[in-house]
Image (cartoon, rainbow, N blue to C red; front, top):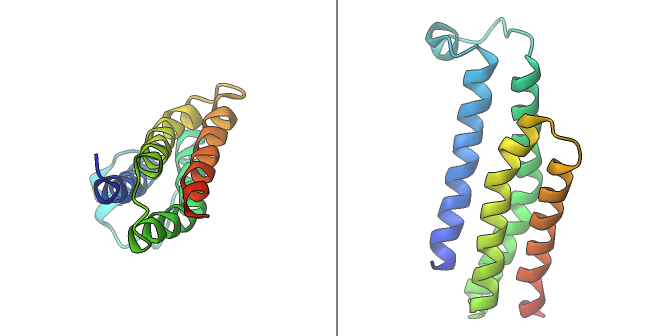
Length: 126
C-alpha cells in the first residue's frame, strides 16, 4: 500500500470518527442528526468516549500528515515509512473500539503503538 493511500485512509478514518461521534450524541435519531443543533443533548458515556477518541486523533493528525508529506516531498517514501504509516493507521483504527470498550490500559497501549509509529516515520527522514 502506498503512503498516499495510507494518508487518504487516515483521513477517511477521521471522517468516520466524526460521523460516529455525532450520531452517537443523538442516539442515532435522524431528526437530531440533521437538525440545527441548537439544543445539544448531554453526551452519553459512549458518545463522550467517541468524542475524546476523535479529538485524540485530531491532535496527532497534523504530526502524521507533516511526516507523510515530508517523506513524499523529500523522496523518502520508503518501505520503512510506509510500514510505520500503516501501523499508525491500524493503531488509530483499533484505538476507537479500544477507547469505547473502556478496558483499562488497552487504549493507552494502542496509543503508544500509534505514537511509536510516528517515530518510525520520522527516523528515516533524519
